[in-house]
Length: 231
Image (cartoon, rainbow, N blue to C red; front, side, top):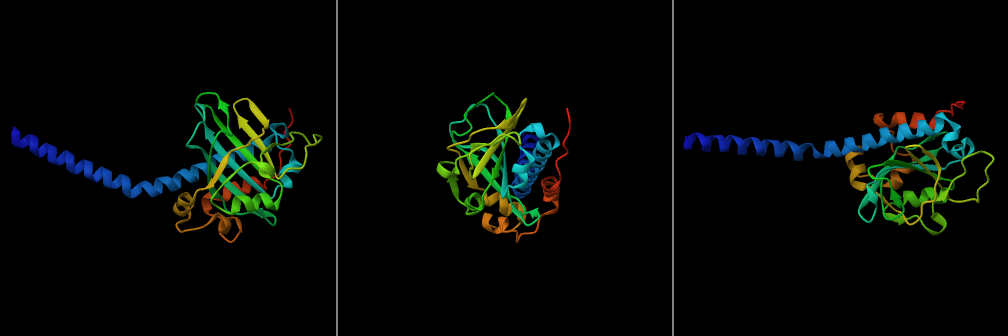
């Protein structure tokens, strides 16, 4: 019985070692898949905003955007520290868009949210300067001239010209929302795992990086016309 017990422990230890080895060997693939999921979520958000003009982003604002970022935030009460959200940023390149660059967000900018609620923030970059701020890499804060201003929600609504407009989509809510003091950071490791090589945000947003197959649906959604759904 004792020998049998030792043998069982040996098998268990060997199995555990194998499982841990598989976990660590596939971790990069999982992380890459996570960014693919971010791309999929962002694609759905863009489609939703375009499906109904009452959803918050006027067509003229979208058509004139020099760049767009989408952040997905899962909140549980107040956001005090640590990573609060993750997402992507793309830049307009001619008549289309660049490949997506991964970003993360942290800070108090999100404020108080309903526990467990998932929200999406769409950041419209109205100027090349705003795009360059995202493309330079590292970390920066949405403040001062780069503060996120609540964007107009109708074609007739006039807003002061701003480098950045912000829109929020969550359960039962679409519309413009001011977003200030938020830290945005380039996710270098995520980009490396997804593109399988070291790429900076500047390189990706320059348009020199080919759009991966998994991101083409995002580009298609960005290029698609507004549906002008009624009712």
